Structures are given as C-alpha cells and as structure tokens.
Length: 88
Image 1: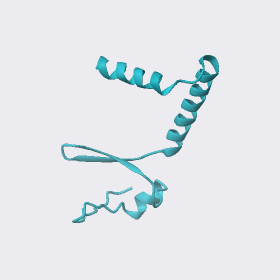
Image 2: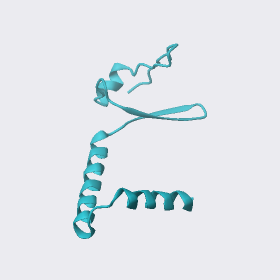
Image 3: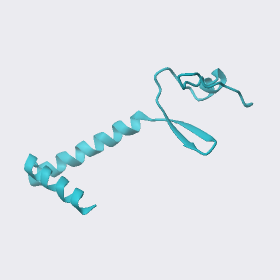
C-alpha cells in the first residue's frame, strides 16, 4: 500500500483514506485510540469485545468471591477504597 495524504480540518478531524479503511475493515462508529509523540501520531482500533470479555471475567470472579465469602457491604467497599487511596 502506498502512502496517502490527508488533511486536518479546522475541527481537528482527519479522513482515513478509503483504501486504508477497506484494508483494515474499519466501519463507521469504530473507535480508535490515538497516541501522539513528537511529530508522530498512531491510531489503533479499540477492541470493545476485549473489554466485554474482561468485564465478564470480573463478574465471574466477583460472583465466586460472593459465593465463598458473602457479599461485600458498601461499608467494606468504602474501607477498601480508603485504604488503597491512603497507601498511595
């Protein structure tokens, strides 16, 4: 694939060339994470299925913890958050 040139709009928008969108199978509403360093910009597709899988694993771990030890109360959660905040 050859390099393509795009232009930054006055609103900060950049059009990803069609050839690139097609090759990467980018669709409207796809989310991209953007990294910038010096004169380089990198855009990477943000994979929501990975986030969903991670959330599902967290839910399973939480359910297993509740089954073994009982549900955490709001007081327990507040105490844990406070301890972590004071540790840093």
